[in-house]
Image (tube, rainbow over all chains, first blue to last red; front, top):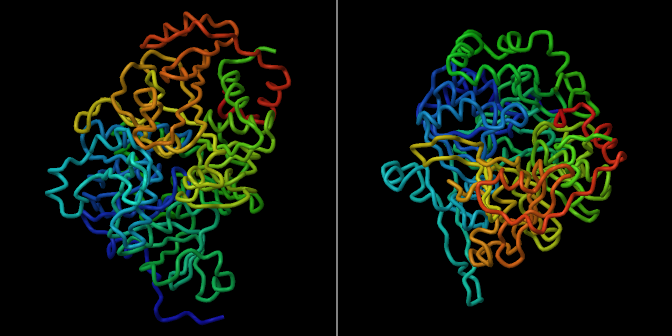
Length: 327
Length: 254
């Protein structure tokens, strides 16, 4: 086993967020609806009062909705904002969009995944045939003027063109979707070592492309390992250490969302969240009591989950918990 | 045996799935239909999710496509890019069956799951496409789930999120999409198909005890009900498996 190297990227969560997430940054967060959202990091962004963020996600649920409700987001490029059975449409998102508090640009999941991949590859766009003939092409959340005045936005939402390689007389059309290169990507993984080598168990969604497309990457992890330990089975590692800038050890860092193999989503809390998030007054109280009123994620969990924590721990065989109340 | 409209709806979708199919499903009732198909009619079909879980064991019903319950015992884990690529590549593309839902539908099976209003003046907001538009763009067999309501079955959509037959006839092909549009709309009162030439929606089946005229009254546009026949009554065995094996926790069938 190697000894701990001097290039350790381990830091405290507040330090990592302070260093890598700045007012008006373009960010992206990992996970998918109710799984592996980097919730501890999201709550720390809220605690630090960072706002005017521009966020890119494919199908995010809990994490995105809390950021939106807390007023941290000004623009969002998304494919989906729902949280499975707990929110057909995320509640804060719905309210803040209708009240014009955030601007939204709508894409599809495949398109967002391609946009992250393009960013990771260093190409300006990738083509697809998805969404031809739909309003995803025709209607833009950020108009040409908004795009012209903001150098960080692509000049167009997307471009439809004829396939330049086609030999057919009738043109085949393709849709070009612009690459995404965020300032910072935050993901939560089951395991990382102190140098940043990262191992996600279960589905990775688009986390890897999101991380590789980004200028900076924060990985929060449930288990922090010494360097070398993950090298025994490199086929199961997704991010090499040079992709990662900060590693933060946060047990239950995805709570209340699920982290496959370690813990399930907290269905009871997500049910409670539904009633919290459906009113801005109640949501503001939640922010005050549960997030600003707790100093870190451990305190938040104690308040939100209490003695249910044992119940949400996953069965090592199935990766989820049969002891949570889901109906 | 008595049954609910939700149950017959799930069974009708499940009956459309064949053994060689590779079934893409979303959350909720579409997931239940896919799992019911596997339990009752097509044990060899493969269920997969846009999150990248392929052939999940599904011992417990997932509450979202990212639920750890789609991961347990799966054959393979893929990325989002992979799962949508399966719908387009030469090997598997033609075998994919999609099951999707939406907030609104028009006479050509185009779907809105984005919003009512315009950007800057949004009256109602839905979750967005997710993978639905991708599925509707790519797959050969697309099954749509909808609750039958006047405000959901509308003449013109405020926002087309997912392509159905677009403006009908060969307009899909002209736009550069897979020429195959949606094959069926499964509702809580009956099933709609699409005319072979015009691609306009018509009533294909009505559930036992439902008057086709009542269905017509629940739709904002004019729909042909003259060819409709009654749906086969669910058998006790089908209902038993659906209740005892597919959703014993009554997570969707409640």
